[in-house]
Image (cartoon, rainbow, N blue to C red; front, side, top):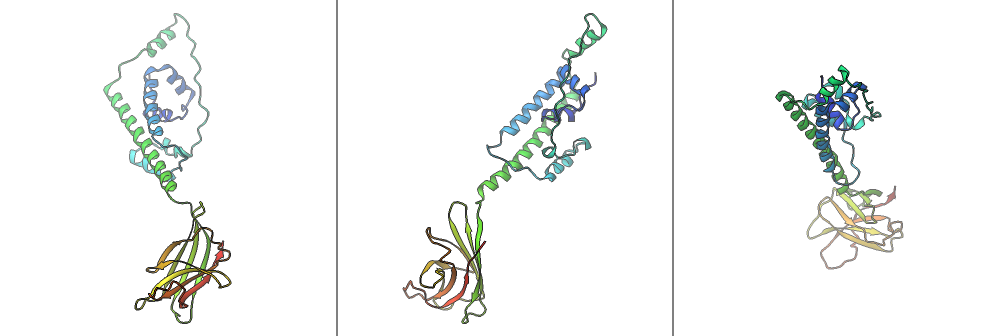
Length: 268
């Protein structure tokens, strides 16, 4: 009796329906093929159960293409399993058996366990490992994508500004962005080019109220860029001006009056 081929055994184990009614009836009658499907189903179950709870991102379509090419699978399974919607499973209908008939005797003989050949066993074992490797690779990629996205903060830019140079610093140019991390924490990122720190001066980043009567120091800018936490409770609708200034090391925390660049935040 002809058995189901290795690829169909693997596909059925992963949840695909039998390719035809005849294959479904064979699977219902053949203990050897049913055992192979059960063994491979356990492999697939273990692979799937190794994923942490949470919604995973579907792997790109070229992942399955790479697996397909690496394992040398046939064109029948070239489609990405993640994009294929399974069709309803074909349920095998019981095969009527007439007592005492020759057909009944043949069917009973076919249903009895038969000794597998060594070559068939080796092919089945190879298919089990191929299935396990494929499932593990897909699961690992999905879990990795999910893990990376889970670790990345869901921040969004809520405002930005072009920082224009003051007359004493004509070569300076700067940009500013306000980010919100989704939990109420806001940060200001600034970049500044075209200026040089001289002597013992340093550069300080400020938020200035739009009427110019109040200002908040966010910190010292070291290098050409920096990110600073905006204090809780600061109303950015009022403190709309971003300023970077030169400050002397004189122990005076007030603004020196020597601004390098300044710009008004434009909200998204």
